[in-house]
Amino acid sequence: MKKLGNKKGFTLVEVLLAVAILAFLSALASVSTSSILATSRNMRMASKAQILGSEVVNFVSKEMRFSEGHTFDADGRLEHYNSVAYGVNCSIYIDEDGKLTVKSDAITAGYSPIGNTLYDQVGITLFECTKTDKEGMIAIKVEISSGADVLYSFNTTLNVLNAL
Image 1 (spheres, one colour):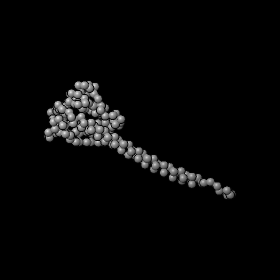
Image 2: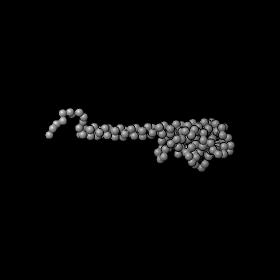
Image 3: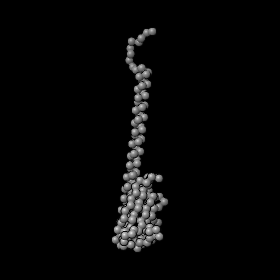
Image 4: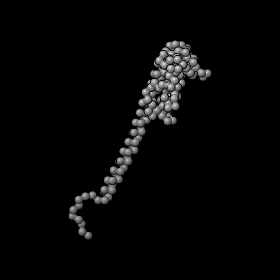
């Protein structure tokens, strides 16, 4: 058997070993990249939920602060009130798309006071305004969700200047 005198290049075993190492490293990189992307997406949705929750509480706080003529149902939930901005017989509710909506005698179709961009991938799943035991105070409860996951929950009480 004659040996070749020119030994330039790699053997088949060396090439296969290099390919196997590269395949292993690329598999590790793709797993960690998808994990990072999922974490980033979850953090972005949680941030949107927190911003939306804060916007809801801020809107309701401003709306209730100077409102009057509050009516409550048997469970103490706010049914109607008179608003400085939206007129008489107002109600705040969550529509079928999970958006906070104001309706009154003047606004019969309903109006969403919070920008639609905040509702991307998240929605309001719970909104309650209830009477408290303290004179002139109402409690606000808000939950923001994405699918079945509650991302943000907020409870606060608010002093209404025109006593209830």
